[in-house]
Image (cartoon, rainbow, N blue to C red):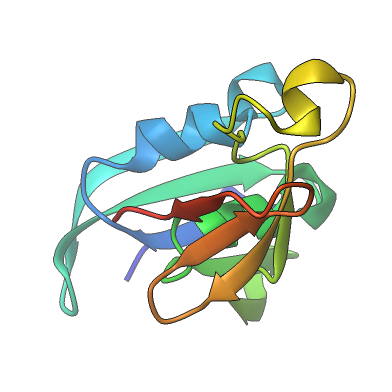
Length: 143
């Protein structure tokens, strides 16, 4: 079990597939935050063998849970208050994602109107398939 002492208020992203923490760090824009962020790579795990962990000082508003759910919905989000786990959140594939996936259809309105948000909706949860809100272009999540 990870010792979370030293983190009074914040978030611990747990059960990250080994070697994925740096990808998640940059995908979530954690490199742009002013707060403390700790990355633990290859921690021992009874369930996974090895896992990565990210500890973030501050409130839950620092992490986009939809983006995180899209990246890897098996990650556990632990909310830390007064140095203890106050709440655990399970993620799922979000029903809709904005500006996480880009449409690759050259005829899509988002290609011409670049200020439009890239909005995709979950079309098939089992396959992890998303479709563009504007042109219905298919995007299947890998991994």
